[in-house]
Length: 178
Image (cartoon, rainbow, N blue to C red; front, side, top):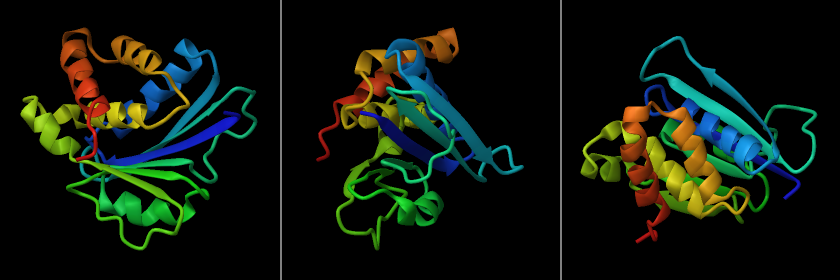
């Protein structure tokens, strides 16, 4: 891997920025790579569109923004509609199966859907849908190790929520797509 470009997007309140923060920490701190993370969100506290951009590389990063994502993690239809046309050739779309309908995707893009909201509800907390998605991403992304992402979760989330977040991560990690 020389440079991996990841865009994560959804509604405010879905933990999009947290996913980006954890991915950046996993790459930079625990997998000993170079990483940047930028974020964008509207003035709304919850419900407005937001996204984070993460670059992870074995070499220094000279431009900190995603230009053509290798991965798009879409937690809302709006984000899918806005960012899917810019996916790199051979990229991977990872999406929330119940909220996103990937229509009109260009040829050669790998599509992986997971019902992360349903899984989060089964775990008793809708707020961990981002960790379910992060686990699924981790299982399908060769650029970062599972252990690095788990360690980044441990140092990022509030201490009293570590167990439920790691449980949600594992639920996504072990999802087989059926």
